[in-house]
Image (cartoon, rainbow, N blue to C red):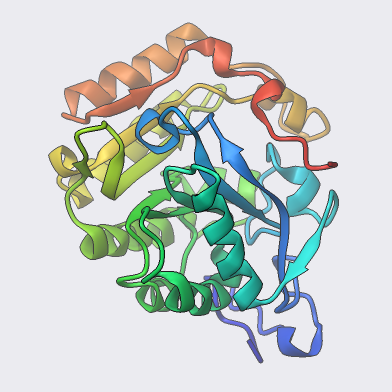
Length: 293
């Protein structure tokens, strides 16, 4: 990571010497929380939970980030070697996890790849790569054959919204290319007899207040780029304004309305998407893990 180009920022930070990248992290794998997590999509959480590993830092700067505590350098932090990360995955499997769920992994993807190369042959459960979708193709290709399930966001169709809300005006085209690469690697979704996902792609889209038209355009882009019958869509209504209370965009200071969410949901159905939706009761900070313990 000398002259880091792991993510589309290509910030050039020499993270091997301890310099922090745009993500706010050096090259040392830093984790805040590892636990069984029941609040993912049904084929990911199952009945026992997904074995989530929350990485610190992030290559986006979303003004409404629910994980801001750890994405901006706070919370509990533990540095791990690639070997220790591998051992942590095995511990989560032994605790009953249905899968290993790597959350916000982008800026550590090379180290994660090394860990997976050490442990993949020992794991009997799928590996989930749970990201913002803002990924470089080179980093993703390094993961080819190591990841079973990709769980990316596709946040915006508009470069203007991507710049205002996430400081990434190139997000739409970069994320769409990344998601297409993810699908190339894992192919059509496959569920086991237990209803749990074994491989495939689930694309998440969070409906934002006053942004329903952009949400519809984002779904149009996905439908044009991917075979909608071979992937799953997770259409989320869980936007929580508490995390954007200090941002300048007043529309983000409220929850999504039933009309906004349902109109996007109807558009998704009209495009042929299958997958998962949420009730508006999901818009609560109680579903965000406590990163201070």
